[in-house]
Image (cartoon, rainbow, N blue to C red):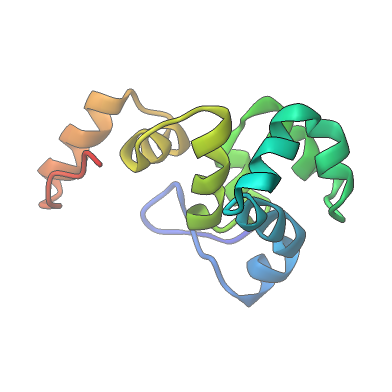
Length: 119
């Protein structure tokens, strides 16, 4: 896994994209309502459709959003997964991946000069 400065940032490069291809493909498939229904109905059967690694599958089951990024998941595709299993704002997903409470994440980003990112 690629990590750079600042700590906790993961570089989504070609190597990561290849490692997470099946994971991102599965997450992106959830853009279709029939796939979301199938996932909700039988998550294990739905995950069986994709060539996920055991680690990716476990991270999905655990809802470990940071681990999913570390395993090559594209954050924008993973956000589709959060929409059906744990509805959350993008900033809540970012806070989870940073290991911070949502308010702390917003405050930290504002202190760094980032626009208020609440959506």
